[in-house]
Image (cartoon, rainbow, N blue to C red):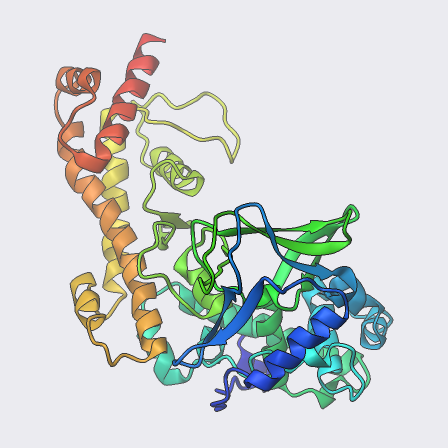
Length: 434
């Protein structure tokens, strides 16, 4: 379902004041400390480009608590469920409502409440997300042509549009919040909600100050909910010098997730994925032959490329992985994979080399740069599997004795694919001797 099918348009929010002023940030820290939060080890800085970050105010040692936020200062899903608008949703009769819907609705309610407890926190939230793909202009979206992210954007917009109309229809007065405001609240929840367990109950929550740490991997800090202290706690996992920036890790993710939820892409990301389509299945896989999704894709190909001479397992369920069954089958499997990757690359209007050239332009807008990084990451993954076929197919077409001899030495001269070719040989040798 398209957002436009519901008579809702996704408009770009033309707001230049992306980050709140220093006064609002000072008010936030004063409010937090007055309510029992411990954050004297940290300070907020706004950079020349308008972005902001968290820095160490004094030397920090590995294992030291750098931030502690009591439960009553966390806008949790439980708080949202118990709020006035949460109770309205609960009794509205809506049959399809996500747990995030309550948080989104509560955030909107508190944003316009003159006496909101959360006002000092809400005042520091971004007022718009022009860097988020959900808010892209049609011109921005053309930069993602060929990428699987376009379908994710459309699906997400459609789901939010349907949810918004259901809330407007079922919850009295919800239509006082505009579609743009509803998308804004979802963007806040998506980019800032921490999933945690409080007293044995899994929940999500917006944690003031904690949500201002920028991403870096490997992680420099670790966070948890401390039931003993009844607080959300961030602990240093390295030493920090005074003034040094302090980061959180948002986890290992494909750029599609970083881009969709947080509005940025990593320059280099080993966890990027590409979408590869076959006749009746689609896979999103990384350039990693040991990854579960890649193994599942190869398993399906071995099954669909099997001939009557291939010794397939006598019985298998849908999730059972199928290893190499013959040199000929593995060859057909890789040729089918190469054809699918070639077709996927054709959907992009530019090639990998052109994207790399474009990224050298220092005048690129943030949205343009992230979009090019997104599609470049997909192309690299597709190239990886094309190179696999290019290297492996000639080997797999050699006599079995040569393949087995090379496997015994674990040396094919195939670089990143030596382990793959050895595993194929070992697997087939085991199957032959069984």
